[in-house]
Image (cartoon, rainbow, N blue to C red; front, side, top):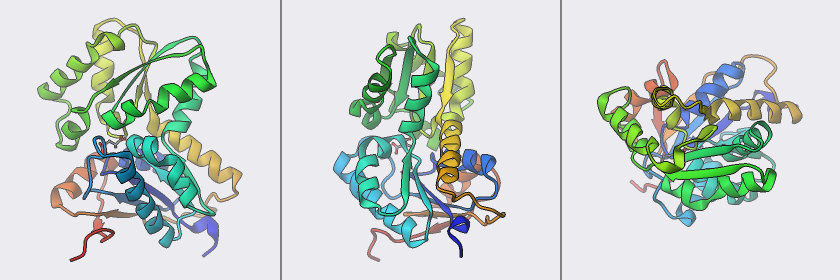
Length: 273
Ligand code: DGL
């Protein structure tokens, strides 16, 4: 198999990264995707950095064993904790994360603006986003808020209903998220509640651009493959989806995140049965 025909490896703590996989599939329909969801360890949001670094290296090794030509860390929490260690661990294959593309985008498109950021406790407490944005463009102010209820709520299928509306509004009422020009959805689960977030700001008559990292990251993946001359020349999919702990409910939920039918295979990276 020539290198251009090899797959793009994508991983997340669970199924949230499928929003990124879906955007990549739409932009690059010729590419084969191998996805890994670490459902045995989800959520990553309140795990230690060292644990997330360990999991990420193991998953990267698995994706390399499947001969992936590029690896995408499709999880903000893992990107915050393990983007450097994973890239150092992986030799010969480029490792992209979901934070750098968004930082680049914001730094060039929102000069002199105030940007809101929501994400897991791990992502927000790391301060990776504000530090990186400040370094690229010191005229941008970043207001961060940890929104730990959102990922589990979405994972349980609670969105577009009264419960999600109440939880989302409660977070978006916080003073740090008022009078902002844009809001970064700093968690790969959040594209599923993007419309609900937009509605809250519209009702308050505040013009806030909601930044969905999935599309920005997909563009970045395209550029990286192009630069490395690794874009697939002909259509190669049959995508493959792996999880570290299989449940039928996860398989059901994948449809919400990816659309269409996804067949999950369990792979034993940690368990000794
Ligand atoms: N998908 C993860 C992220 O983008 C959040 C879920 C978790 O806490 O594992 O940060």
